[in-house]
Image (cartoon, rainbow, N blue to C red; front, side, top):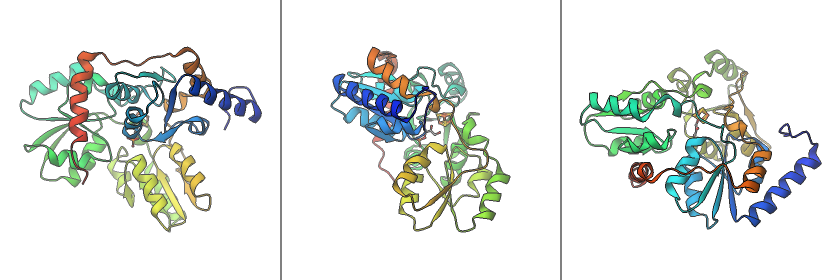
Length: 314
Ligand code: 13P
Ligand code: SF4
């Protein structure tokens, strides 16, 4: 896929080769979230989900990490690997859901709920993580929720993930924060029902950031890596994918014999798509923009992330 770089396929191939040469020269690892454009997947050393990528950044022996994703993901890499230079390919790539909560608003809510632990989805800023007791991802949220003491938990910022978790952990009272992911929240129920009617044999997979009425139509609810794994392990031929369309590229590459379907209104995260090959090249050339979480935020944020990592998976 071209990225508006004005060149044909040969120019794109040359750009990709230049990026790989420069990554070696800079001692850099390039990591891309599944939601980035296919060309960016192609130049990345690793393509994965948000937490997996930060863990990969930590494991890598390279000095420089070029993160192709959104701002909070590069911050998580900075939290986990303070000794590395973490670059975000495109500084404008933010996450509207992460922006639906601030540390000030969270502190105010905490004052209203003394003694109630705060569980924060990794899709949040470092400053919000620093004001939270523990983090979770969409892959480990139920285990993390069950690990908490007490009957009530405030879950931020995604209310759809919180409502889903409430159905799986009914013995806790989960207090919601009014945040949501615009890309997942606006999936249209009529479009999903039509796809199911047209493809009755298809396996329907949805990300828990979708609304409950959409999740009720799904056979599998999972994180991005969970959705990919479930497709690869299934013997079905057709799949309806209800998460950002970027996951379809690796699926089609691995299983060209299968059919991966999307809603009529494609699910696109415009921020993830901001990361282009040109941005990756520029980041490598200039070693900017650097994402560096200050120590007074990093240390408490790391505590919340490491507390999550210590919870055994269920
Ligand atoms: P994952 O944690 O599953 O990669 O999801 C990240 C995300 O931004 C979902 O919208
Ligand atoms: Fe944020 Fe949604 Fe984009 Fe994920 S898909 S980065 S939650 S806006």
